[in-house]
Structure formats: structure tokens, C-alpha cells
Length: 372
Image 1: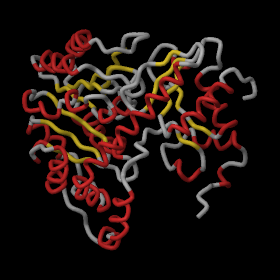
Image 2: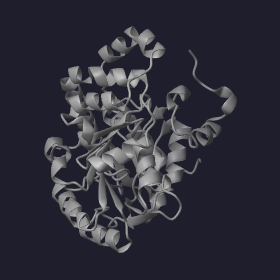
Image 3: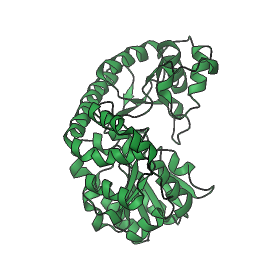
Image 4: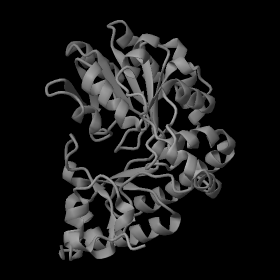
């Protein structure tokens, strides 16, 4: 089947303008996607075969509701169901947190824009990360949260777009500082599966110790299932869990996503192996990016890499456009993020080793090009 949409664009430049306004559906347009953040090594073929074999029942019947879905997630993460809220992607839960529950939410920036975008006007406070290290000073962050009267604070770890972890000890100290002022701490661990020693870094197993903490996770990223739309929130604060759950409609997860969760525990080893492959490719990619003269590359903890282009090179938007027009490769620039020098930064998702190598050569070719 031909998925291209020729009527939407006639040239590669028009194709770039069209796609740069989209938020998905990229697979229909025949280009190499180094923008979205997939695990390319999961799910295994057996998962697709199982879904295909059961497609009639999955399409014809109502899926399960929240309590039963929480049991399925609970089986994966070994947590009680009353602590779990299952969302149609993490985005659904973010909308409830930022858009409905938080009276004043504070977010370190640059970060995933949806936390601020989902908040009513005037309800979101942006706290700048240290520059140029992009590290989070949790003591300053806590002080600012208290000062502005926030009732909810968000930390994404590893952060998007910087790909940097916030140390676990810092997050615990932050939670304790915020707890004294009745501020909920939302820790987004969506990319933590690609970090080293993730079992020691994650706060999921410690959640019962911190009643003002909730962990949010998009399963789309680590499990490579962006189209299935599954995310969850975990908290030992059952009152908070109930408040979030009340914002979710009864059948928010479709039958394919439900069935994926049902069979997922059978593929635990395949999932762990897939994350190791992602990390191996990423680490080779990081070393090659570091070898580009003048490039500043932040050491990644997730499956994407944040770079500052040399001052003498083209800007982030210019490099992004040139890569697409000349090589049919798509990355993300940082324009639109709240940070200094936003037009000098790019975020590149790591794909396979071969694709990463092609990107490196293309990037070196276009960085100083004037043909855009």
C-alpha cells in the first residue's frame, strides 16, 4: 500500500513544511525519523502475531475499565492496583494533572512542553535549569515552588530534551522539602528504562515512603508502542490517585492496548534485551557526535541526544530543514523550548547503528551548507 500523501506536498521543501506541523503519522511519509523517541527493538514479532490472531475479538468487544486495567499494569510493575491510574498515553494523565487538578504547577525548563501547555493560562510557572549544564538544582527549585505557591511540581528524569537524569537522592530530598508545604511532586520516568542501573534509580519501589509523590510513565517510548497509547501514574497517595482517576472516562484504553498489557509479562526478558540494544546504539552514536569538531554534546541517559551546534555552523532550524530537504532525515530543533540559545540546540533520537551513522555523515555535510 502506498501511504504517501502526494496531494499535500509537491516538493521536499513543501513536505518538510507539512510534516513540521504534524504530531505523528510519520510512517506514512517515507523518511527517517530521528525526531520521535521509539524503542525500535520492541515489541517482538510474537506480540504482533498474537494481536493479529485475536483481532476479531479485540475489535468487536468492549475493552476493560480502569480497575481491571490497573491490575494488568500492577502485574507488570508489581504494585497494588489502588495505587495505579491507567491513561490513554501519559498525555491523558498530564491533561488531568496540569489542566484540572493543579492550581499552580511548576516545571523545570526546557522540558516536555505538554505539562505547561495543558495548564490553564497563568497556572504554569517555568523554572530555568542551570545553564549551560542543564542540571536541576533541587534546592532552588523547591524554594521557588514554595515562593510561587505551587501545589504541584514536575520533574522529568531523564529530561526531555536534555536526556539527563536527576539523581535519586536529589529527588528524595526534593519530595521531603515539598511535603512540608503540601506540594505534590510528579516524577516523569518515561525514559528511565534506557538509563544505566534503572532498578536503583527508579522511585517506583520506594513510592510508599513518599505520600506527596506520584510517578508518571509513558509506556509508548520504552515499549515501542506509540500507536497503542498507554501510560500510567503510580502513587501511594490514594486520595490523589482517586482524584486523577475521576477525570478518566470509563473506556479510555482500547482492546489492542489492553491485550498488549495482558501478554506483556511473558516478554520481560525480550524487553530488557531490547533496552540494552538501544543503549548500545546510543552510546556509539554519542561517541560519533562528540567527534564532530565544535559540537557540544550532553551525555545521554535516554534514547536521544541533546547537542549544541558550533557557533560557526547553521542554526538549529536551518540544520533541521537542510537535513530533511537534502537527506530525508528529520530531527528536532529547540526553538519553542524555554532556554537560552534555543536556536543553537538540536535533539536527535538514536535509531539503529546504520541509521545513526548515516545521520552523522549527513549532519557533517549540511552544518555549514548555504543551500537551504
